[in-house]
Image (cartoon, rainbow, N blue to C red; front, side, top):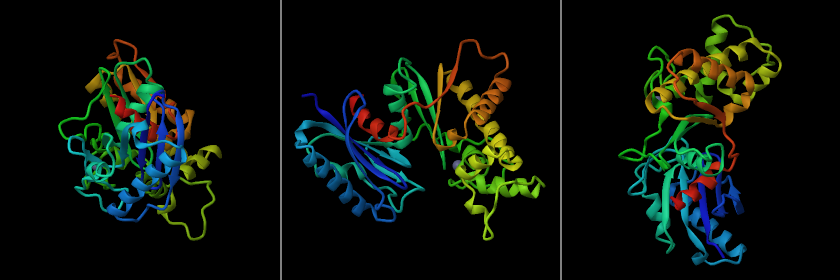
Length: 319
Ligand SMILES: [Zn+2]
């Protein structure tokens, strides 16, 4: 029997552990949500317990697995498997997560950033199949990216390459990013920016046809609410989507100029804003790139689905 891969996707809201085949199929998985708010040691114990549970409920033993690949929502020092920072989980600053899990198993364990894991899943099994190089951009509460160059994930000296959300696109923007800077792409064009944009547009006199509750406060504005706004042709929601799309268009243009990739894949929750949003991103990009595109560049939506982080983390073991 071909050995299975074990994937762990440690997120800010959910923790998934899965057994994955080398063709990217989920053999079995367990997802929990009760890790939120717990400390690092407790979460490590939970991960170990879930892996053991998965092995035993499938009547396997550890030696039936090729290894354990983990994805983490924050900066990771790839070589030593330390988590550096995260804004999605309590603690985990300079924490030796890979070793903490590896101490309990005899098989190889690796740790990478979650956007890298998702990018690798797209490259192996999703919209990036058949390409040697591609950039994956995920746009949800935050913005992250993964860079595949010549069939390899590019991580940089630390492992933090692809932190594309922190590239600065508008230094006049007053919304402060999670990193402390003003004007990061993340502070202009993702879930994090939506309350700020909603308030700004209202103060500019743009009205909304969205029904706002009596106790409305701007922190309640999220991607789902703006999607609803788009569906009812709300002028304020549309104005926000246009502004976000234009910034992502600028971001993609910057990616294009740095990497000249044949493919850029867009994923993450905000892509559910649909055609209006995606077309606006592309039109902004093509407007900026003008006559500087000499070979075809594809800009497409992610195909790997909701478990991309889990499957990708496992697939990294096949590198
Ligand atoms: Zn930033």
